View 1 (cartoon, helix red, strand yellow):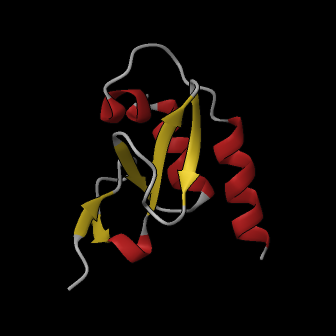
View 2 (cartoon, rainbow, N blue to C red):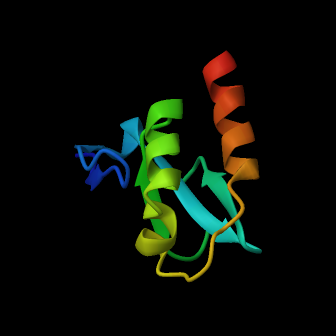
Length: 85
């Protein structure tokens, strides 16, 4: 049974397979495709809409329990790659 997680942007519950885990690494948000990277993770639907909503609402720093504004560039680039394929 796949565990259920909540998207930090839209707050909808979904299986881990439908969501992308995001972790903070060197003050940059990166996609954890295999959900194996260490540290706290935040889950988001791999869509531009949910990513933009999470960034504009400050959902990632809150979910990851960090202060400041992490760099979302690496994550946005990764999502563009996913959506192009």
